Amino acid sequence: MITFVPDPVLLESPRGRDWPVVPAASVLGDGIATATADVAIVGAGPAGLAVAAALWHHGVRDLVLLDSDGVPCRRFFRRIDRLGQRVLRSPYEHHPGVEGYRDCELLDFARLHWGRLTAVERREIRMAQAGHRSVVPVDVFEAYCAHLVASHGVGARTLRATVREVVPVPGAIVLRTDRGTITSRYAVLCLGEERRDAPASWWGGGFAPPGVSYWDERPPGVVDRLAVVGAGLTAAHLVGRALASARQVHWVVRAPGERYQCADVNATFFRPEGRSRFERVDWTDRLDLMSRYRRASIMFEFRPMLERAEAAGRLVVHRGKAVEKVSAARSGPVLRLDGGGQVGADHVVLALGTVPSTGAALLPGAAVGERDGWPDLDERNLSYRRAPRVFAVGGAAGMVLGPAARNLDGHRVATARVAAAIAAELRQDALAPNGSAPAEPVIAHV
Picture 1 (tube, rainbow, N blue to C red):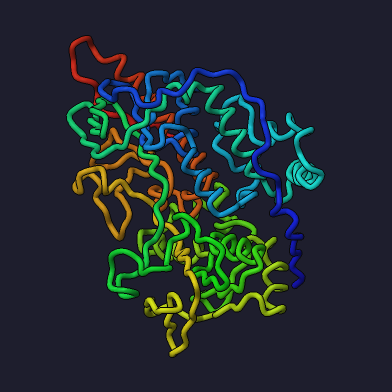
Picture 2 (picture 1 turned 90 degrees about the horizontal axis):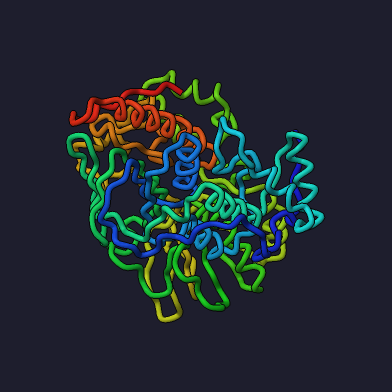
């Protein structure tokens, strides 16, 4: 079988262009987080932005987004820029826009700004219009997110606050933050994902040894020898950036070889029939599907560049080698691999993947009902079964929506369910007799 491998030039879209946006109110910023709201959204990344925009279309205006940065999507793009990433893996149809409503979608936005696109980017637009795989520039995606923030009034509802605790109480949710307390009728946890830390056995736990860092930390200065551990797209960006700086790079891949794939999730699970397949099987089979169809992979565009570097001796790939120990030496950190081999470097960067935040750090354990690392969610509306006024969007919904839950497309599917359910429940609350307690949440089937 012949595999088409796109040219690496697709990875090189410009970053930092000036994009016009619609006028909008300024963000809430610091403010005093002691208030009430119909809906509190924890996290203002792409998932939180999608939920807020969808609720806007449902007519829900009394909401607040709580985010440690206080600016929608700032952390998301800061992580991207730390890697030097120029394009997204997700195609044009995967974005935080709203499903089911007349709205400007990502492809529409890119076409509206045709004059700001490069020739390569314009070809990708044509590919997307023809229904083929396309690569989205980070610049376009960031400008589109800013458009959603402004046009849906999200910035004016975003508060800089770190949520410490989410406490379900009768008829409400209490969110305790570093800036006070907010009481809401409903809460949506859009917590994103956190990096996967190294096993304690590598160096005994605690802080990493000197010369060892994680992918989301400050990158090392110029070094002659860099070692990267990890098999995914993050690792590929780190390797590519190091090669561009004329370094000698060692790449440690635990699997027998790298996996190149157009999408980070098997495309089956982006479609309704794929999600239906996932929903029909039991818990054990879902765990198996999650492990088989959500594995580290790299965009095809990297392949020619990495193969050329390896052939030239600038890149040494240690395939099928798991790290057993990481130690410090006078000459720099040393990776000891299974089978007795070792890799010395001036600096080591760990790119071990991410893990979904399930809400266990915020909600009481009994409310999360965690099983095999996953929360107990109502499959009809993604609420926590034991805290039905709290909903999950993002990776935490993986055991309901399948592997695509962690992807932008999964955010859209989850958002459609959650926003419709909350809007229906708020309408039900409004119909409750004056002075009576709000009705128990109802289920909106989407």
